[in-house]
Length: 351
Image (tube, rainbow, N blue to C red):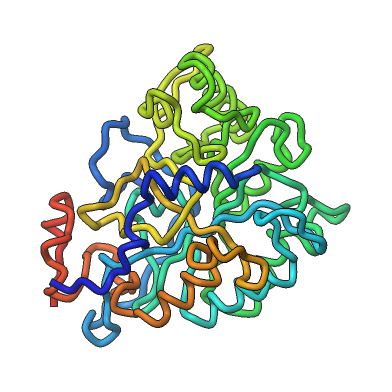
């Protein structure tokens, strides 16, 4: 079997997680991985119908390859944290993704295996934590303010047809300084963006009781569903990457009359994720890559950030998720057959 996957990419070790925690400051689903959570209806934007299927070999399709899930926080011209990015650098990274044939998809679609992108393209999941005004704010004209992440993403998408202007925002209380979230979250949802839970107070779930864990998540879940009636958040991101003592409470629980059951839980670091069709894909431990340039990184971080992993994937196309353009099949080189999750055996299309 082909084994070009870089070992550090595949899993987030306990040691790596500890380092990350210390550093961090801050629809019916035809291809859904089996999980212990009840079924939920996705309300993210429906995928655009694909073109006629092509020969997967002709585009070197590998839908068992690695998928980058990028993590962003604050955009600022004067970074003070490794989690800050200059707007110009953020735009440059998006432009590079577009040039490399990446197509953004939501976290909700990713965890459900709803990856409907053109043949030969690579999915990328753009995620934003903490719902800051540098990520999204509306101007007097009702459009995203220039310089915000959403405005920059829409600009890049307009300049690069096929680069879908979508992302997932993991929000807290008072999202984007909108007390009840109705205006901000409603706009994002109506324009094809995804919304996920990030706890109401950005709590370190490792340090609080089981009751508090559920309260933090459920209160945030209730804020989101109240702001966007009919919407069901399917994913959550762990503040500080910290799991509660009872890890299962991160994806399923209840408090104050509100129950939550997520299909995916996202970590803070530190490499690309397995494909949702890969036997090792764990929907409740999905790694993310911190967006950062090599120039601003410490020696210890240089091999665990976007400016390392994105070029690495480009240099190792055999390990990169490449679409076959047919969402009804899971295509891959025959050498990868033993890493296909049994759930998708009936959709396997080896070549």
